[in-house]
Structures are given as structure tokens and as C-alpha cells.
Amino acid sequence: MAETPPAAAPSAPPPAPSAPPDPAAPGAPAAPGTAPAEATTTATKPDDPFGEEVSYAERPLLSIKGGTGWENGFETLQKAFKAVNAALAARNLTPAGPPTVVYLRADDAGFDFEAGVPLAEAPPPSAVAEEPSVRPSPAGRALRFTHRGSFDTLDGTYETMTNFLDQKRVDVRDLYVEEYLTDPISTPETELRVLIYVFPN
Image 1 (cartoon, helix red, strand yellow):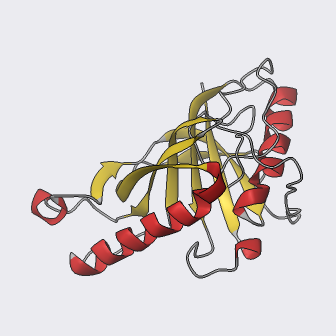
Image 2 (cartoon, rainbow, N blue to C red; image 1 turned 90 degrees about the vertical axis):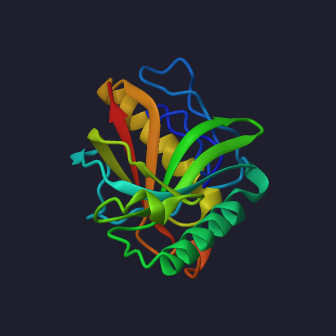
């Protein structure tokens, strides 16, 4: 992801967008970091959700926690997803949704995250004695946005989200979630399709 979440995006750290949102904008969360200024986002398609209100259901998430700098953020997320996939196979667990990233913290230096996959139901504690572990996903009323393109161009999408939320005067929590509709490990990075969720106060 790029290195700066939208003004409405929580300050959690995804591959943050490059152009940080205006900290004074209503509802703007703390920007995770600063991505390359030249990064741009791939245009969304007409039927892509952008600002759609949804109810985000809590699910058990088999995830691994980590932290990284922006320069190697996507590679770090890929390694985390590979570790989660290995744990799924070793523990005979079945995913029940797309690869997901929950951003926990972000600043100019980098971000902290949970990267994993949702499960239909939480397994017994004996199946998750160590990392990756099972944690509940965020939940509640959310606004859903779409990003198409590489991790490094997420800044453009987050900037557009920031403008959208500012115009709508929507104040959001310091939290955001990304769901990768395309496999973040095998899909060419320029062809990624990601749903981004922000949670209004």
C-alpha cells in the first residue's frame, strides 16, 4: 500500500498512500506515513464500491502481527500471508474470506499490522497455540472503498477517500481494514484489487 491513509482512514498502517491527508480535515485520522510523491492510483471502475455504507461483521482472523518500513511494506505483508497460509495447512484450517490486513499504527517511518485470513469459526485454543494466532476482526458500521493497482499507488486512493469523507463531513475512527480480492502473493502487483473499510464514529 502507499504510505498515507485517507483523511477518513484510520491511522492504522496499511501500505499507506503517498500524499498524506490534511491533518486539519474533519474526520481525518493520523497519517501512517509518506509514500513516494510520484505514486498514482489506478482508476476504479464504475461498479466499484466507493463510499458505500456496509455492516462489517466480526470474524475470527488467523493472523500474524508485524511491523515494517514503507520501502518494503508490501514484501513484508506477502511474507506474513505466506506464514498464515502455511499455518492454515499445518493446522487443517479452512479460510472463509479474502486475505485481510488490519492496520494498528503508522507514522513516517513505517507501520504495524495484523495480516491474515478470516475463518468460519474460531478453532480450539490448541490449534493456535502460537503465532499466527486467532483474533477477532474489527466490526461495525463501515464505509467501503475500492483500490485497483499496486501497493505503492494506494496513496492516490486514500487521498481521494480523504476528500470524499471531508466533503461528506464524516468523522472516522483511527482504524482501517483492507481485504485483498486478488491474491496478494501471486497476483502481479499492478493488478491488485483491494476493498478498504473505514469506520465512522
